[in-house]
Length: 339
Image (cartoon, rainbow, N blue to C red; front, side, top):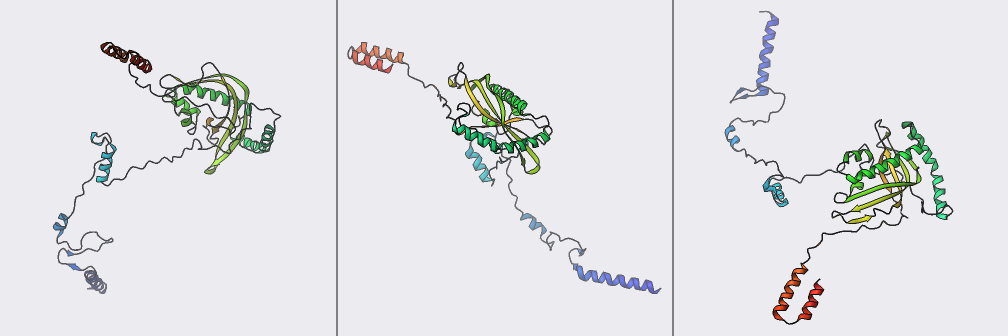
C-alpha cells in the first residue's frame, strides 16, 4: 500500500472519531446528524405522546355577521365581541384626496359694503388700497398659472365660472339623479356643504339675470406635499339676481319666494390641479364676508299633531245637556272654548 493511500485512511478515521465526540451518540436514534439551524423539537424524544395530549385546543370565534338575527341589538354585538376578546373596529376617516385640497389658500377678504356702498366712502377706499397692495401677488401667481394653462384669461374664465355656477345650482334641484355630474363640477370639499339638508326638502332655484359682469378678484397657486404638485385657486365675484325657494317634506314653504327675486353677491372659489393634464376647474368654496348681514332664518316645521275631534265632543256634550236639562249655558261655553 502506498504512503498516500495510508495517509488518506488515517485522516478519514480521525474525522469520524472527531464527529462522534462533537455530536454525541444518542441511545435512542443512533448517531445524530449535525444541523445548521436549531430545532424546536424537544431534546428528549421520550414522552412525545404525553406532550401531545397536553395541547389545549382554543375555541376560535366565528366571523361577526351583522345580518345574523341574533345580532339585532348593539348589546348582543358587544357581548359577542367581549366573549371572544375582540376589539371594536376602528374607522379611519383621514383620507388623502389628490384631486383637490381641503382648504382655501390665502382667502380673499371682500371689501366692506361691496355691491351697496358708494365708491367715495372711507371703508371702500381702504379696501381698494389694500387690493392694490395685493395686486403684485396676483400677477405673480397668474404668470405661474399660465405656464400650465396657456389658455387662461381672466374675462373668459369669469364668464365660464358663472355659467358653471348656474349649472351647479340647477342640478341641485335633483341631487339623486345628478350626483355623478355634480362631482364633475364640485370638489369633495364643497359637495357635502351644497347637498346638506336637501334630502328631505324640495329645492327650487332659477337664474334671472346678471346685475354686474363677473370678474376675477383673486388668484393663488400653491404647492402641496412636494414642489412639483401645484394647485390653482381663482376667486370670482358674481353679482346676480336669483329666485330661491325651499319647501319642507310636507310641501310647506321654509325659505325664499317663488315670485320675488333677490340680489345675491357671491365670492366663489374655483380650483384646479394644474399639473394634471386632465385636471378641470371645479367649484371649491364660497367666501362669506364678516360684514354681511345674517341670513334670514328658515321656518322649522313639525308634524301636525293629532287634535281631538271637536264635532264628536260637541255632539256628546249636547246629548248630555239634553239628558240632564241643566247647565246649558256653562256647557255651551266649554264646547265653544274647546273649538
